[in-house]
Length: 276
Image (cartoon, rainbow, N blue to C red; front, side, top):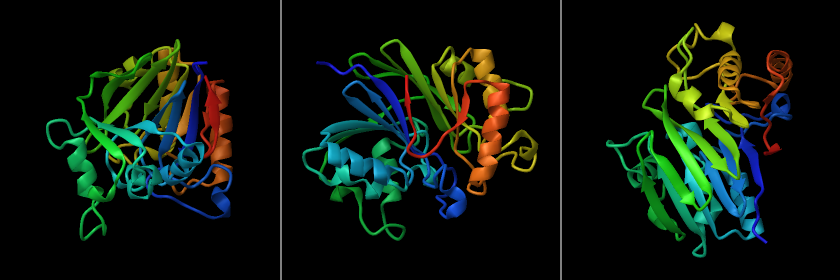
């Protein structure tokens, strides 16, 4: 029987740097990594520290193929790559996709760039999986498997970033991080990607009152996420990319405030699974 379920799992929801300690026990401390299961196919978005745990489950399940997509290649979204055990299995087939550096650097060059001396002791040539590096341009429509359509778009972030809209079995989940909004102006690229989405995973590193201090950092607020989801008629908003300074009690309060403004809002927790 062909699997038709569409689920989303948060392996890491933190931004900037992983954190640990009692104040981070409920929402988790690993950085960005989200898995989307579209039937029998697994799509991974970003390779932060959460990727290590994702890899252990993939090994446990005995999966033989997957696709990885990058929003961009800042440290907190890539440093899980060398510790992703499926890449060290000859039986594994992995396609790695990126588009934020289109025309500047290929996906293969990006991965090679983060695994070289003096910053890292081994090069990607140590991987023995069957790896297919894929390049695209923001705005391209990707079709990695039959029945899965992924729309892409540019986000407002230093050095560029890409947002994704994944469509499968009449449902839609969007991965929108890292991006900074312009006050008083809804981002049209984001609105297009999240139009009538069932789930929007949105960069909410800051609260609106904090934005003036962090203008130019390339991140947004949960309040802007609410405004965008309302305008796009989206159903659920996952508040994501939590500041490493934000402890559990503060995230609880953000969740309460966001839900009061938009009933479909929630704060993403590491290990949380959402069924669409």
